[in-house]
Image 1 (cartoon, one colour):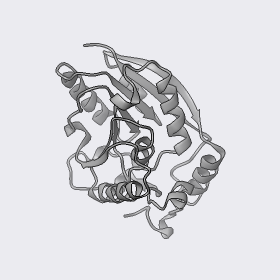
Image 2: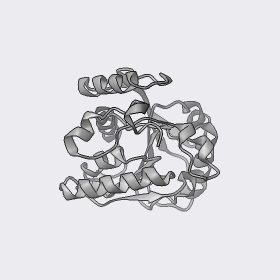
Image 3: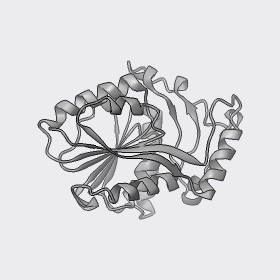
Image 4: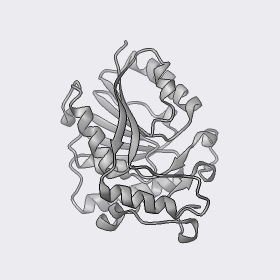
Length: 239
């Protein structure tokens, strides 16, 4: 796939070098064609900085979630190669689920899950589901959904509309972590959601150096990395 070869600017992230998995690479949305009708809504693939992920989860844990991690399901929509899934699997969630539309990325994520499991880093069940995010049925019980800006505004609106209907018959709290929150205005316009946090989450020095290097190697120079990610946290509070 474009973006996964050296000629396309591929640069390995330290996370992959340390653990022997493959979650690196930057794939523009126009190259994420699977034949599905929702392909045009894909933004890009890029693995979340581990430091940003951990910092945001810690902030969420301080927000007063309804249940402990051991009772909460973590779902990454637009999971790509599964970096967030791997990171979440170490934290003690009830289960961790990655949802990815593109078959190549989903298969790479499944291979990473197998490697992660063999290393003994999995603290709870984790799995990958190859399907469209809006077609994924939310699990029962307390739920934390993770988005790393996987799709545009139209798809996010459709997703939230489906969740509104699902929450009427689904038991359990629904919280949302949103990294690189370019479509924040969509959530702001939706009834029933309460924002718990809005701000900049800094990358660690290691992640900042790695992401700057990766972006600098992109031949077309269409993406850039800062020392932080714009993030938000939301909670469904209306029945």
